[in-house]
Length: 202
Image (tube, rainbow, N blue to C red; front, side, top):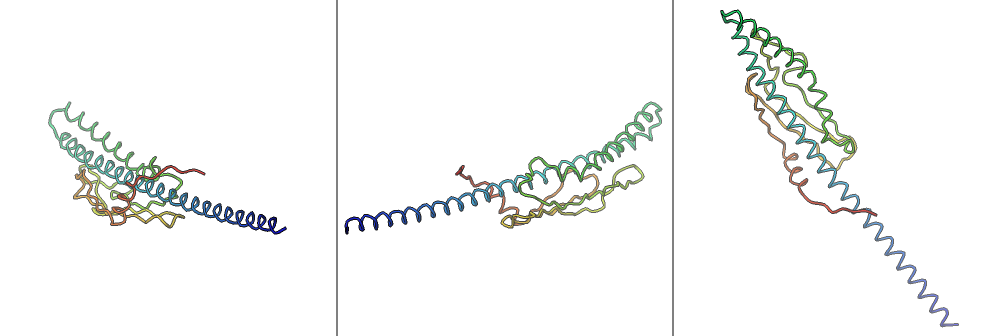
């Protein structure tokens, strides 16, 4: 009788230990999954922000270089040679039309980057230094509304991810190389995103 009771006690203790170990393994698994998700989200946010800055640099380069070409085309319209004057006028009009069209797509490009995953639910705030409707000087050159502006991101639900910000600037309307100064949080995020993380599944 005592032997049966001892066996029953041992069996009960064993079941209890197994239950505790199983519970601990589930907790560890959940923590690991959460950490993996945070690392993936950090990397996605870093890539997204870098992509947005790259897109801005590309757009500002286009605007600056096109402004230079518009000025050259305008000066060529003053040529006394009829053929040169006619060709320059056509080129001038075409450059202005193409620039206005591309500038109108700026907001769309800032919200449709392929690097910005929908999983991180990101809100991007950025202004166009030229404005949505371009203002031009007598030569047709698009004018800057602001020489300095900023871009910032805010995650809508994942509070573990930082809000990022970068200060941007151009010298003038002919400047095609935008200057970028990122916040400390953006720089720190970049280094954190370089961490490798293991694959994990349950």
